Structures are given as C-alpha cells and as structure tokens.
Image 1 (spheres, rainbow, N blue to C red):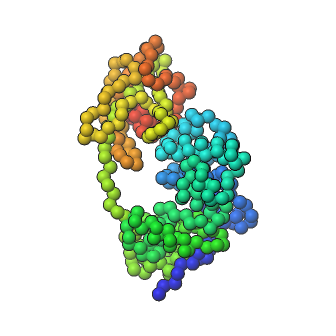
Image 2: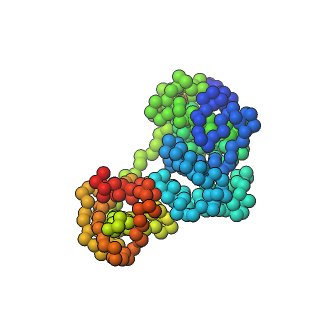
Length: 352
Ligand code: SF4
C-alpha cells in the first residue's frame, strides 16, 4: 500500500518553487503577514477563466494600473473596459466583470465579501471562482479544481475514468487532500505543481514532491492521464464582414448587442454567421458603396464553432450615411480595441 500524499510535502515544495505571479502574495510574504488583495485575486480569476497565465499577465497589469480598486473599475465607462478587454476572448466575462464591480461597490461598500455563499451571488462568479477567491484571498479551506488540479489528481490516484465523468471523483480526491493549515497556499501549490512539474506532455516526476505517493508514477501511466472523452467535431460557420472607410479615414463600426457572442464589443457590421452546410447568409451591407471582396478569409475558432469570414471593403464619400453603425475617426479608434476575430478581418483587409 502506498503512502497517501501529504499536503505538507507539497507546501514545502511550494515555499521554494512558487511561481511569481502579479496577483499573488508569495509564501514568504504571506508568512510575514501580507494578505492578498481580494480585488486583484477576483480580477485574475475572472481573466484566467478559459485563458492561460501567459495571456493574462499583460491584461492584468493594464487593468490594475488603470483601475487599481474595485471602485475605480465600477466607475469606468463600459466602452473603455470592453476595449481594454479586447483580445482576451469570452466577452461575457468582461460584461460580468463590470456588473460585479458595480455590485461590490454599491451593495458591499467596495469590499469583496469573504463569505463563500455571498461570493456566489456576484455576477460572473460561479462555484470554481468562488472557491478560488475564498481559498486564495481569504485562506478558507475550499477545494479548488482547475485543469491542472484534475491532471495531478488523476495521476496521483491513477484514475482512468475519462473526463468530464471523472470530475466528481477527482474533486473528492482533491477535497480529501486539502489541509486546514494554509489552505490558500495549498490551493495555489497544487495548481503550480500541475503547471510546472506535472505537465500534460512531459511530467518532471523526478522533481515532484509527491512522487513516492503517486500511483501513475508507480504504474508508468502518467502520460495517459487524465483520460478524456472524445470531443465532438466543431461545426463550421460562414459570414461576411463589411469594412467601410470614409475618405477622411474614419472606419464604420458598430457596438454589438449586449446579449450574444462578442456582446457589447466593437466590431465590423456583418451578416449572420450560419452553418456552411446550410444556405449562405443574406448579404446586408451597412452602407451603399462599391464593395470589393478581399482575397482569402478571416478564420477564427470559438468555443463551439469555427468561423470563416469573407471580408468586403469599400471607400465611401463624406456625405454617405450608413444604415448601421457609426463612423469612428482614427484618434478614437484603435484596431487593438477590437475582439480577435474582428482584428483578423481588419488585418486581412490591410493585406497582412
Ligand atoms: S510523480 Fe509525476 S505523474 Fe505523479 S504527480 Fe508527480 S509529476 Fe505528476
């Protein structure tokens, strides 16, 4: 019978090898009494949903320099926050981010609630995020299970049930290991182990503090785990984006409706996005013009489908009025304010 994994071994490892993250209070500072700012922990957790640490770091820096407190974020104009979020994807998160900042400011006096159940009532805060904020910001013994933790647990217990069916089993393992002492550091330590040692393709078992307790290491099965149920093929959709430029250099843009994909983001007027196997989307240029089709397609993959966007461009005179969108002059428009798919359409139109 192997020894059960011990949280203390992992915490010792974490004390030496914790990743340096801009939102994190490292183990040494924490031991010296420094406490994390719940605003920064919440912001990082919302940004990290479906996104990597590497992709988030710069956005986190920009947001916290521009809006250092939840009150300053709550007071920011929607369009500025959406523009600052552009490129990070999953835009419903940005809309909920603002709603949540405003609820915390208006209803909680600008102080994030420490109570896990109250955290769960905040916009955009689901069970995972509430557990992560409770553990990391308030040092509560909550079980935090992200993809890294799932991989570590599947290997530690040599669990071969495929994901997502394995989730409750892996969560039970993670819960059994969560210690009463330093639960916040422990939650971060398991994530760090998964991100830096117990990696998907090349686990560095020789450096792992849990090697002697690890069933997958003993059985030589680490690389097979975690098992995953086969993914469904994503459908492909098609659409047209219309990029109109006025002779003075202004671009015709529209803010997308709040609900739905890319909701509230700035974008090019366009057709619906329909399955390539069905009828082609009905053309609906936003302004009368001589439209030219750019060679190639802007391609982008969303969570549930691949998109192929035909890009059409036109140069229009000053007095022509659009029936959709507004012309935005260059000092007020930067392509970096656009979500990635719209930026790809812009790049294609620019011949990039
Ligand atoms: S011994 Fe290897 S497989 Fe097991 S937890 Fe550590 S890194 Fe992962």
